[in-house]
Image (cartoon, rainbow over all chains, first blue to last red; front, side, top):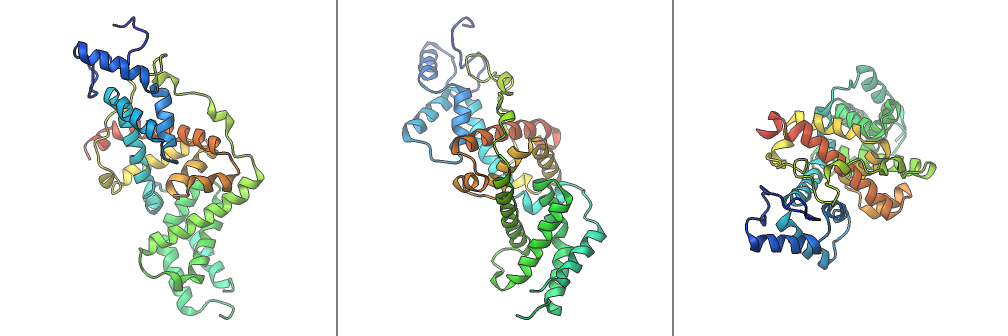
Amino acid sequence: MPEEPYNPSPIGNPSFLARRNWWQTTLVKFIGKHTPKCTEMVRILSQSMDEPMPLMMRIKKRLHFLICCWCQRYEEQLRYMRQTARHFPEHADEASDVPFSTEMRERIKRKLAETPR
Amino acid sequence: MGSGMSATDLQRASRWVDDHGECLYRYALVRVRKPEVAEDLVQETFLAAVRGYEKFGGRSSERSWLVGILKNKIVDHFRKVGRETSFTDMEFLSDEFSEKFVPMGFWNHNLGPHEWKAEPDEVVHRAEFWQVMRDCLLKLPEKIRAVFAMREMDGVPSKEVCAILSISDSNLWVMLHRARMALRECLEMNWFDTPAGGTA
């Protein structure tokens, strides 16, 4: 098997479709040939976070995920990062110990008091 | 309204500085890096908050309301910067993640994404997670970080990000793709693959 020109599914692949028998191997090869390569898929997945993915590509993505749990995880993790990143600003005080000094605090308060409304 | 702030306004603003100043300042510092710029942004935020207090209906927490104002101030800041400097970071466009993939373009299965066990709802309550997230963000090249943060942290729609920073759609996609790839990798190595991240 290793000498084949493409191999999206080596032994031990935990994806839904792995090359566990002749039928699956044929299917994996077919899907591997007719859907984007992973390098391309990760780029498309990232872009789909910013603009809708065309229907045909959505179908190809679903098929690709059957043979590639890594791209599937990648997509889940893009959503995960979006979900958590949105909360970062409100937790920024927990994220570092950069000092917000008393002087700075007082300077800000003083400027606020001086500024006309 | 007359000039100068009323005693009540001042008292309230002073409490905001004490309760939320640290959070706002630390967030601003992740975004702009220069302490004096970050301090100015925080200052402007509190001032805008005092002026617009009537509009705060208490629908969200005080913290998220103030953070929302700061986000707008940051966007304004980048709008100015974006006009003055080129925002396309071409240096970062080289393909440094090629080792993740085999030459045929599929994931190298030993290096592909691992499963992330902890749920997003769990990690948002972990201070250590936010520390890792901050460290990972600061590892990104400055312009890439600015684009990613504006899109994913401030939630600015992609068309607007392009307009604010005067960059093309395709440049935005490339920069975001690089940022996501690098951030994912960094979070996985420093959080999800560690006992802290795996056992949350």
